[in-house]
Length: 468
Ligand SMILES: *[C@@H]1O[C@H](CO)[C@@H](O)[C@H](O)[C@H]1NC(C)=O
Ligand SMILES: *[C@@H]1O[C@H](CO)[C@@H](O)[C@H](O)[C@H]1NC(C)=O
Ligand SMILES: *[C@@H]1O[C@H](CO)[C@@H](O)[C@H](O)[C@H]1NC(C)=O
Ligand SMILES: *[C@@H]1O[C@H](CO)[C@@H](O)[C@H](O)[C@H]1NC(C)=O
Ligand SMILES: *[C@@H]1O[C@H](CO)[C@@H](O)[C@H](O)[C@H]1NC(C)=O
Ligand SMILES: [Fe+2]
Image 1 (cartoon, rainbow, N blue to C red):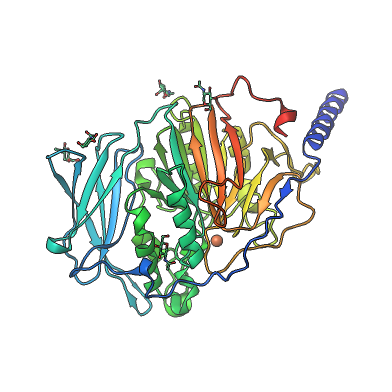
Image 2 (tube, helix red, strand yellow; image 1 turned 180 degrees about the vertical axis):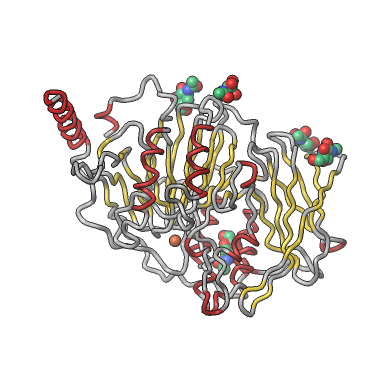
């Protein structure tokens, strides 16, 4: 018995020493000097907030995936004056056969604000990999948009996701969206890691700033699905002014296909898209053991078929690993609860926002600690995901520049600049991640990384040492 423990202890010591060797140098803290301009909200009369012409014209048009495998789309829009039509007319490119589906309309009140008429319409059973046009509105106020459905789910289907978080509606937010649009690597769907409008920064959470945000993002979100994650700025919990229901504006304005993944809440759900399986979690809903989110999540992971969808991606607002001073360790309770699952099920990458900066981790885990063994330092772990914080969309709170020192060994690269990311899946073994800061040209990669799939091990994968 004793010798068994000694040998296990020795093995552990060896592992710890080995991993220490791998991670002995902290990563890169970029010395890039950004312009020190203010992140001021764009004024209400800005071009990006313009109301479309015509009586009761649909505005704030945005789409998201509408089913589990990518043949459905939820189309949402707001009519300001009256309910108008709930119908979406749609047709495949070059097809003369027009189809239509009816959705629902709802309104909500928030303190002294009353929303416009919010429409949500799910269209289903679309063909894969097909461009569709769609129209909303009536008569001369009808507006037309288009989207392209993803290819059929499959292991080697290339697909390009964009990544934006904590966007807000400042001049910097507009630069982030512009850089995403003009990046020569074209994102086909956007993974949004939470904190949308920052309307809650205004007195009484002035919800007209939800409307301006909806109009601002329409130029992209009406044409490609934005996959939503809720952040702390979506909570809008202000019982003092009679608003005790968390996530009220967010859940009325942004529908997601949560029932398709047997979730009981729009705040956590999953979708498959091309070769990726995307799990969205909620940092601000109960996630402890026996909570609805926990029960759902632990049943969800074993369902992921990596032969069908090799890339397993988790989106969550508060990062599990972040070495910035601001929001330090806010994701720690979730890390303690969920990191063992991420490692066991070989999650490829976890994207988070919340911290208004960029950071990329090494493949590390910190799951050996059991309160008494003292093993509480992140170690290199080939089964662990890469953690990427991309909360640098450009909102009015500005960048967080203060970092913990020295840079921890698990942190591979960190820099406080506004920007966006691209996650470009090539096939079942390879994906390429790049981070683009707003001050650079559209094609410049400020940081990048080849990701090798955790399930489909690349035969020529470099040794542990080369991977660091
Ligand atoms: C639709 O028509 C255009 C112009 O004729 C053509 O370039 C395009 O390939 C067609 N698309 C499909 C899906 O048939
Ligand atoms: C119209 O949509 C319905 C419902 O999704 C579908 O069953 C039908 O095949 C579609 N018709 C055409 C012509 O696309
Ligand atoms: C936002 O960006 C777009 C595209 O670059 C530009 O046309 C527009 O004028 C910008 N608006 C503001 C208020 O910065
Ligand atoms: C996983 O997906 C593959 C490819 O679609 C399929 O052949 C296989 O049966 C699936 N496995 C399970 C357990 O469902
Ligand atoms: C997967 O993509 C990578 C990067 O483009 C390439 O080097 C590799 O050969 C591809 N694998 C297969 C099996 O095609
Ligand atoms: Fe946040």
